[in-house]
Image 1: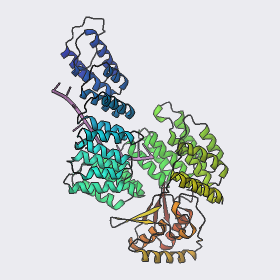
Image 2: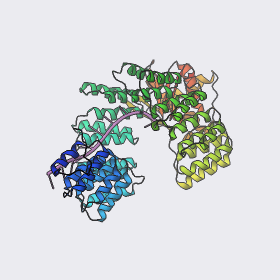
Image 3: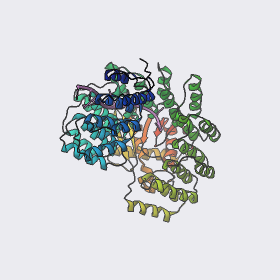
Image 4: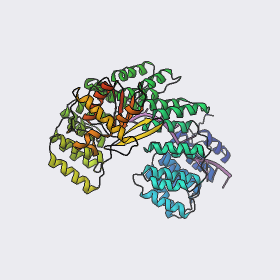
Length: 590
DNA sequence: TTAGGGCAAC
């Protein structure tokens, strides 16, 4: 029903009933709601809470929180339901600070919360920068005896996961409450979103044991977890399970599967799926474009970008991220400028370059050796550069040994990211590469003083649906003796082919593995040896590394791929390297 | 006298 309120100067004869009906029918327009509210005030009718409630709900749905707040503030002793509605509105409109401040006000006034209050209050706390408020709210939850309300518990767990407090999340999980499908899905999704992929898969299995049947939403998160871990076999099994259980594998499931193939470096499987997808969305296209980009097939990424526009799909800011990173990984500086310029010239707000796009451009310029240009580019930014932008330039300074600029960049970087372990390591590597050992020591001291811990580098290989993880110099694996023997043989073979160990090369995030003696037993070398021993001939060896790989391991992998006639696919922190017959897909530009 | 939660590309 269209809703056209009469001008307020006409005689009013509307009843409360009529207002109620009108309110329900004009929930889609802010102006109509405002006019109706004004009209309502002129009638002198005593406004029932139910009318205000409708109004408030509709305003929060439309996102007009300031008007909703105004309405709320005019009320005398609003009921708990209205407090809940307002808090929910703030959370849904991404205003967690306001939500928590309303809750505080409620608390100060002594308004008693009900079981519906806390799910949203806790959700708001999870979106705040600090856990502090959330912790205090948890205490209130217990005070009111609401900690066994299933949804409150789920939201608390999600909050603790978000802040990396897995222990607290587990503690809440252990004390049994009834969990329905949505609660399981919320939990699993929270694990995936906060980088706890193996925990997510653990929960996925427990859910089956608990007798809850997963649905499409669950499978999407599970597939996403497999992508994060890089476990292709397990991902395939999970997708099969979904098919067998008669799950409707909609476009979201297929996109998650596509992303999994991409993140496992299985670009051929991704391509095959993409071509055969009955339905595609901008997310499918963006996933595939980024997939080509990080797998070193930049031309295909750019061709696909034209293809999607020819088919009438409108790229968004994520699509452009894929396009720019395709240029970046291939050193296509001119092309990068063209695409970036296309974004910047666009009149649409959604198309304006964001910080990530600037970081991509800085990476492209810097990596190609245009350090000054990259620096001036940052200086010309219309938005404030963040750590990602400065970090990209610092990385470039490390590659091109520009210690002077690097030092300056590091000073600026540490203003915005003082406690970042990886930027400290990057800086230390830059000094090491330049032989500035006294500066290396200074960075290390600073890290010790600030209690910044390095992330330990590891490499993982999937075999027989199991995940085998190796650290540098690791001897804890059951096959260690065999692995080291194999590694020794490989060194013999490739040395005769011209391999010279680059023991001093620490240009990248090699972190704990940077000492000369340990270069021989870097985690990726152990993982490759393990793969050669166990994985059937003809199948590629897929290694997933959490940090960037070092130059020596890169050279080693090239030689090994030649001497063993095996394909080695190495995923590092930011891209894939496909080694075939002594050549890497990155063309040694990385 | 009302009402609550989960999913895909960065």
